[in-house]
Image (cartoon, rainbow, N blue to C red; front, side, top):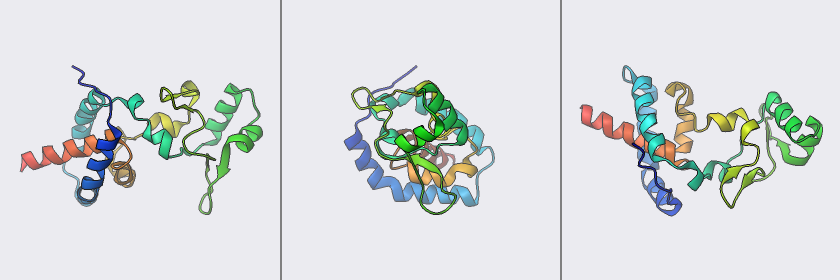
Length: 172
């Protein structure tokens, strides 16, 4: 049964600010010594989280972060917008400074986010980074560094870590 209610961002930000350090320590502890069956536990908890989380009432990821655009993403989206990849890059993207120099949005919030209803105007062809966000269903150890960042940005990640902490406390 769904118990989904709109996300109160002010309340979420306050809770995230209060708990982010303890959550990050908890994730670091899991990095070092993950309990047996962690990914299976997370899969169960993740289903609960999505029953409770209304992403359209939040869209904080689209408002405060930028996805990395792969070559395949750029080709797919440019084609959808009837543009060349080069024109798409020129109009909407920038190269990341240093490192591998990924392609990122020029602006935040995302140019494809409709701020009236928090819907994506290119949802069906959105970047792979967006469709996988917040990466809860991936192997935990491969994304623990991302979860540390996302506990204060994504209510779904926050809720998953909160549930994990509670469950592991009760198992002791």
